[in-house]
Image (cartoon, rainbow, N blue to C red; front, top):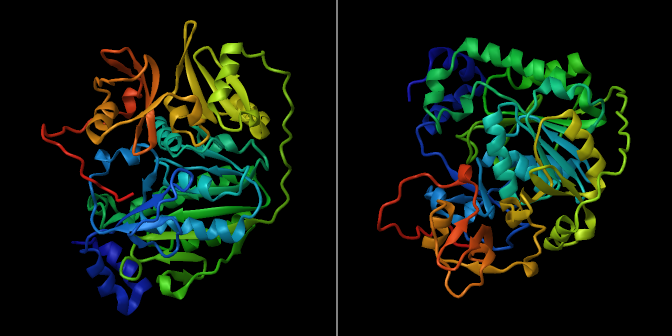
Length: 454
């Protein structure tokens, strides 16, 4: 791996005698790791554990994840191990229900982790500025299945008016990507000192813009996948000086190989089984006025047909129905006012649980309902299919169900829901979103790769 001389000049002083070991590590194979969704499975895996994450596991080799229906069912998420360090921050510092923002959330690794880590009755707003990436984020969060989430497509500046709205904010900042050199060699060609400087300016801008939205004493978690001090420790020191933030320390185990610095925590590939990563935690000490949310007038009463949809949810009394001309949603009642407020202020992609699409007088069950952890399976006609049928379903190809009643049927694989079909008898209308479908070409003799032993 040929590294730019300017990168060597910048990084070598950080590592001293260990720099040669660092360079050698960049020529090794990137570790493959996943994080299990405990809201969907309590399976005990035989794979090696990620030491700083209770649900993280290393795989001995990288399988074809695309061909594993369990990935599409939200049973696990493929994530770089260093990013799973987020668990240490949440478990050590956040102990009561919170409203949290993940500002730069796509494709959803940290967002799915956050909603699993936050205390019960918390609410997560996962935001992504690039619209196409926001839809990918929404897909991954719907597959993860937690109902206390909404996805927005806004710029950081849009949040500056939400004074003190969030208890905590995560900023996984766009960066120069030095930590991805091993995983993505193209990142080397795109790197330059000028790009680092541009990233620093962008990071300072978005941090200034979102800072007013954080409550007094709220936490800002800052992370990058790069090594240079300008985007890491010096950015943290800038936040302390320019924003009046206070650095917060967490406890780490020396055996993990994580490097604690003057302003955060670093992951180096020659010391940890992970890619390059940096994380720091800061507390807002300055006083911030908290935005008051006015209660709106009562919404239009839903039709009985729409109300009946609540029967598809466990603890249905905990949800409030929201409908548009095209769709019916269920949002957790404890956050209904906040979600309604944000719907008027933000560009929302989805919120809560999408229950059904409205087609004339008919209600067509939504895939988000099938994948939700709040789904009441007892209300559904369901069938467990083999791997070939599951893949055909995920490719939105025609499938046939024998000995099944006509109407809407929940398709499951190894007991995990994937989505709906409308069984017509001689064939099925597959209701899986076309934009989610598997597009890769399959050999005619394709068989179950048995990716994960769950």
